[in-house]
Amino acid sequence: MTTTVDLQQIANEIDNHIRSEGSGYLAWYCGIASNSQKRLFNGHNVDEKGGWWIYRDAGSETSARAIEDYFIKKGCKGASGGGDSATRYVYAYKVTVSTRE
Image (cartoon, helix red, strand yellow):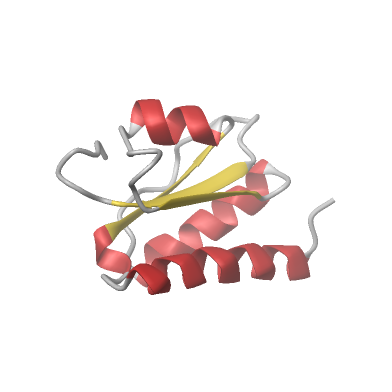
């Protein structure tokens, strides 16, 4: 079971990754999925080898949605309401000319 500490750790890891890239939240997209790799690399067309991306298992749909909402409020692109009851992953990627939001 995911705890508050785990959620904070996940948020910190994603936040650190976004900050290390340097372009800021507005250049990033945050979402949720039941299969984060399929969503990132097929759905959003993120470059698996050369792109900036991160995903984490939040443990539950509720936790994934809470982290997604946190990053959208910080300025990341994306919108709440996606995913389904099997959703447990939260992901973020840097938007580029080749990605699809």
